[in-house]
Amino acid sequence: MKLAVENQRRTALASMAAQSSVAAAVSDDAVKAAYDKMVADFKPATEWNASHILVDSEDKAKELKAKIDGGADFAEVAKANSSDGSAASGGDLGWFGAGQMVPEFETAVKSLQKGEVSAPVKTQFGWHLVKLVDTRETTPPTLDEARPQIENDLRQAALEAKITALRQAGKVEVNEDAVPAAAIRDGNLLTN
Image (cartoon, rainbow, N blue to C red):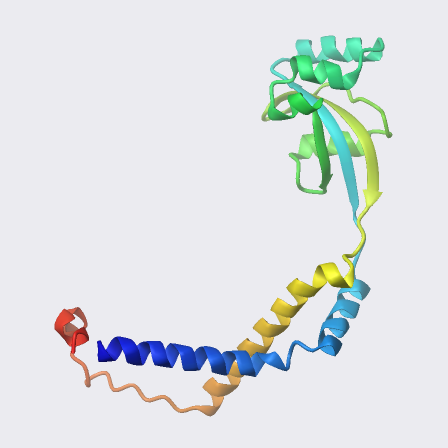
């Protein structure tokens, strides 16, 4: 029991020491500086908003494409025919960026104009008809949106720096002969 209490005490002291070590790292000035660097390094990327219809054969995809080209509503055709979970929402996939869709699907989306529907596209999931709804460029988050992550990153960096400094300044000696290996499995040592 004494050992458990001592371990709890040491854990609490270590936690308090860690918190005090990193508190100064998370100032408004430090957060602002990190945010300014993040925004300066930000590179906009294209995102796409697309819908699709997924079917199991090229013939079915061609048949549905002909209906859409003939004036049928894409969303209604998706609801009635698509075999995936997006069917209920008219095939809406929402916004996504590069690398989030299988390559064949992404290539098809990139080749479309807003409002255009692709020819049938084969992927590992089946045959798709893809409609590009819209595109946009990403923007950096606001300072308020980024603040929690920046604060966490600053705390983590400060803690790692403190631990590195303590390790370099300290001298640790390990006497491997002090405790016999069999003692590790002796549960009675923990009850004293």
